[in-house]
Length: 473
Image 1: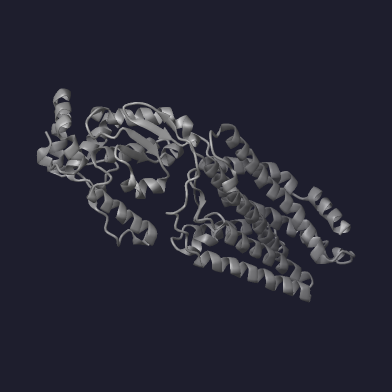
Image 2: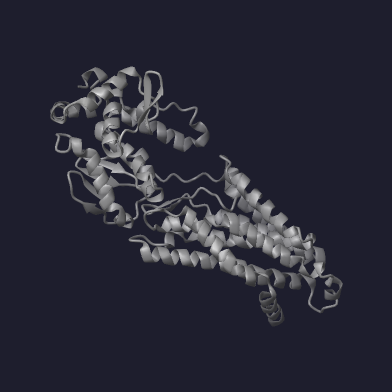
């Protein structure tokens, strides 16, 4: 055993991984930065960004180990090595291990850098619930190196390294973008649903780890099979194939768990008072001032009216979509995930808030809208064209006109003409017809005092969905 460890140390020092480790770290950190939120640091996003580096780091690691696998045969010293007392499987294991240590180390170092930055900048949460995401990434790198070594061992050509890197890049990307369960077989994509509210939901880390470890073991067994086809090698191949098949079966047949009954991780919201009191999760504390300002500016034309919501709370994206009907009176909810991730994310937030300001989420039409969304989410992505969704997000035309007008107060004129006599306001689905366009223009042209007086008299009826376009001033 000590002799094998000594050989591993020698191979580690001689490996090309020594020279590629730093470039791999730089590439991984750069690639992860593409997936990070633009406004704040969050543990779930950082963990998934680290995992996403497998897209490039995995195939590169495979290319590096493929190069090392064919090194001795390219130098034409393969026959000389057969005279060594150390058996071929042990030599191959040492060479693979020496290179895999560098590539796995590069991935883990990049992950440690990103986790350190997150720990320095995050205002809430913990990395512990999301460590399985990163752990599967480590196993994925090992799997890539095993397949790379297998390719280089059987094809000791200079072209083996780039070839296996390209093949693995394509091989893991193609299933990842499938709408069916085959996507779970890709190391770069799975049904990861994680946030600061619930932690890691629908976790497939265990079956994915079984699948990837089985593949890695099978690849190494095939390497050993060429040098010495003894019964232990055949047994190892059979066991690893069974392990891989078990993991694949679990991934292809697993049904994501229903999270409706899952408890929220306890937290104390951080709030800012105003015409509408705005509360966010502590992890989003840095976004509270800007979020509160935008929501209150959006609601300013309606501030103080009877029936206007007085509290806005951040919830998880799924809760915002599916559980608005359970809210107490006077409370609206919003999701900050898009606002944290992309520069234009606050536009999506204001669309949702504007809807809830002019249309009660508990009204029958809105409840029907959210029920249809729940059906689509439960049935999967292929159901979106089958299950009918109520138009205008469950609002009536009068509510749509007022919601668009509120958006204009924040973002300027978000409407554009799409054809003669009709125009569309960005992000709001179907275009306005001439009647709604005329109502929109009348509302915009009103004197502010007249418009305020009309809202005071009709806001409650407007939010209940009782007004028509003809009732607008």
